[in-house]
Each structure stands twice: as C-alpha cells, then as structure tokens.
Amino acid sequence: MRITVLTGAGISAESGLATFRAVDGLWENHRIEDVATPQGFAADPALVHRFYNMRRATAAGARPNAAHHALVDLARHHDLTLVTQNVDSLHEQAGSTDVIHMHGALTGALCAACGHRWPAPLEMRPDDPCPACARPATRPDIVWFGETPFHLDRIWDALDRTELFAAIGTSGNVHPAAGFARHARRRGAECLELNLENSANARDFHRRIVGPASRTVPEWVASLKRG
Ligand code: APR
Image (cartoon, rainbow, N blue to C red; front, side, top):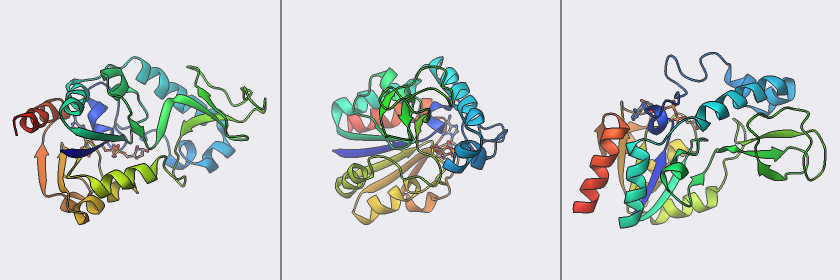
C-alpha cells in the first residue's frame, strides 16, 4: 500500500525532546519572532545561534524510541513516504532512509549569502565564515516562520498518490503541513491521526488513535502488517 506519514514533535517527546506548544515547551522561554524568523536572526544572530546550539546539543544526546523504530519496519512492508517537520535526526538514527525534512535539520549549516550547505558543527557562531564564499553569514539550515518549507513538490506529489495518510504527534497549527490531511483526503486517501489529543485540524481525519506514540505507532504498524 502507498502510505505517507507526517511526523511532528510529539513523536520525539518520549525521546526527551520538548515539543513546541506544551506548557513547558520549547518556545516557552523564547518569542517565536526572536528565534525562528529571518527578522529575529537579522536582529540578534547570537541569540538565534545559542537557541539552536542548545537544541543541537540536546538532540545529539537523544535516542529514537519505539515509534521511530516502528516506522523503519513499516517501510519494509509498504511503499512509505516519510515526511517530518522535526529537525532532529531520530528517524535516521532508527534506520529510516530517504526522510523528507521539510523544516530542515539541526545537522545542517547554510550560508545566507551564497546558499552553500555543509554539515553543522555542534556550536555555530554568527561570525563563522562560509567554507565556500568566506562571508560570515552562517545560519542553521532550518526553515523559519515566513520561509518556504523544503521539498514541497515531492510532498504534494506523494499526497496526490497516497492511499493512506497518517499524521503522528503534530498539533496541526503550522501550514502547509497542517493542510496535508485535507489535501490527501480530497484525493481519496484514508486519513489517520495518532496523537495524545485532537489536533487543530482533527476534523480532516477519518480516524484517530489516541495515546503516546511509543505505544500507538508500533501497534498501528503491527495492524498494517497483519492486514
Ligand atoms: N505521543 C504522541 N503525541 C504527542 C506526544 C506523545 N508522546 N507528546 C506530545 N504529543 C502531541 C501533542 O499533543 C501535540 O499535538 O504532539 C503534538 C506536538 O505539537 P507541537 O508542539 O505544536 O509540534 P509540531 O506540530 O511538530 O510543530 C510544528 O511548528 O514550531 C514549529 O517548525 C516548528 O516543526 C515545528 C512546527
């Protein structure tokens, strides 16, 4: 079966990585505009680098949980397109290949001046020179608010053709990802949400499995292998 999975911060919560919109979530001590917009970066690049250096260090110490591992298994049995909004690398650490990082990755550095990309060091600083053009315009290779997510052509194409769309651990607040279920449903896919609670776009899904991802995702994958 052709399956498209979209993951959000909730799938990594049980690996110890904070989600964004929880009370004690990641944005709690930061204004989104300060750390996750091009304007915030222009105003205070050192603050933005500190924020992502902190996240990079935390993510480097995290390990995938049963939900990440179950998706590796799913790809062995079905034609899976795995799209993530997460900037951690827990899907890859679990063994998933060809993960579509629509919001970029903490492991990447990008030169805001020339567009060159390279592997991010653990600690990035605003005056780090670009290895290609030597200008001090280093930024995390992460999609900020107001910027266009990566790989959208490939994602819309997968959604056009998918038979089953599943969103795991995402609150459905951020577009365009929040519109994927509606798009896939219009094209005839069955839409399923796996989350601790209803997302903001819960009505776009036919079905919902409520509970922690480390339990619900392995159970769901097992049911797909039986069926
Ligand atoms: N299992 C399943 N779901 C969970 C778990 C868990 N253990 N823990 C939390 N959740 C759910 C929450 O109920 C919530 O609906 O995961 C969702 C996390 O939502 P957000 O924190 O809003 O994260 P996400 O949807 O990934 O955010 C989308 O917003 O801030 C930007 O670019 C950032 O990629 C991010 C995007």
